[in-house]
Amino acid sequence: MWYAFGFNGFNQIMSKEECAGESSDIVKVTVPTKIQCCKFQGKPVTNNEQSYVGTNTRRIRASWSRRATLHDAEGEDGRVCLSGFGEGPLHQACCGSCLQDSRGCRDADISEGFLTLAFSDRVKCWDLNRNDTKPVWSMEIKTSDEAGQQLAFPLVPGGYISSKPPFYHSLSPQLRARSLVVGTEHVILLTASGAVYTWGYGSHGQLGHGELSAEEEPRAVEALWGLPMSSVAAGGWHSAGISVGGDLYVWGWNESGQLGLPAQALRGKKQRTRQHTGASTSTCVETEEGEKSVEVFISIQAFPGLLDITESCDISMVSCGSRHTAAVTSTGDLYTWGWGEYGQLGDGTLRSSDEPGRLDFFKDKGLHVVDIVCGPWNTFVGVKEERTPPFKSI
Image 1 (cartoon, helix red, strand yellow):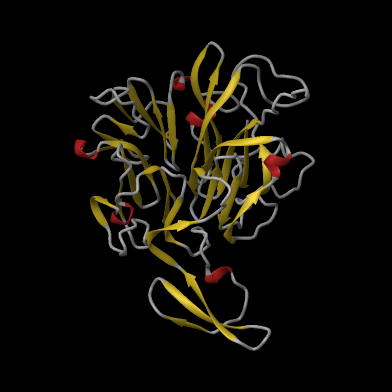
Image 2 (cartoon, rainbow, N blue to C red; image 1 turned 180 degrees about the vertical axis):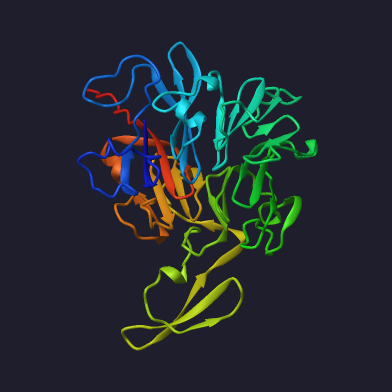
């Protein structure tokens, strides 16, 4: 099952029909809402839900106005359906059902301009604004590299696929890439040994090199050298990584608290500030006892820094939106923080927060979070029902 919350301006979370009886403002979904499956296979189950027998949502990909949902089904290959903004024939071809040309796809990527599907032997790309349903670009690929290692999309043998032209970018084989993520203006690569490389624009510290300059070629993040990482995530202008030991590291822009560090824009006190550097400010705070203390705010963190979310368990998954972040713990709890103006933090409010907050919604329903995908202004959560340990008589 998948739930979502946040920006719904193009019905990428739920349609107007699904909002019947709900608040008239469907643009901002502030609490987790179950995503309804498309009419892809078989008969609908009872109890008025739009889920269908034999279908399973494998993963979700999101852009600002669109959602691509990759389905599996009993006896069928994977297929993709589109939700959200769409006026072209490709979107109309799969409205209410799955795109026929997507049969057999293994993964997908979607942007405001293009839909990219990865198959076992090829990659195809469609222009979502073009007036036909033919792919505008395709490339034959293998499912693994020369060493037989399975490659995670958008990685392909010899390089990676981006969501806009030019679609194919080569990579040095010496990098031994294991996974790769693309932010708004930067790229993060994780090697087989757990090292992190970044490149692209670095004006907000999102590259993690301690400076705000751009990098044209992959450059190792030296602050993480010798600290193997298990996964990485790229947002609008911030980045995150999880170490093999389950610790979360963050760097980049913190204007909306998306790093989980003190952000001056979120503090409503009228305080006198003094600029020290381009990355931080200090504020003189007067306590109730009349004493003065200095509170430091972080606007840009150009080096990776450890973020403690909870001491009771490790972090297993992280995803970054445009200006918000979500993380999943090893116990299946979900934490969100950062920009929340469209409800993308899922806490029932439109407030932003520079402190990670746990969503009790899923635990209260007996659900265990197993996947997390942040769109630019929304959040998608994959869950499964928690298994109750069998009762043992004494």
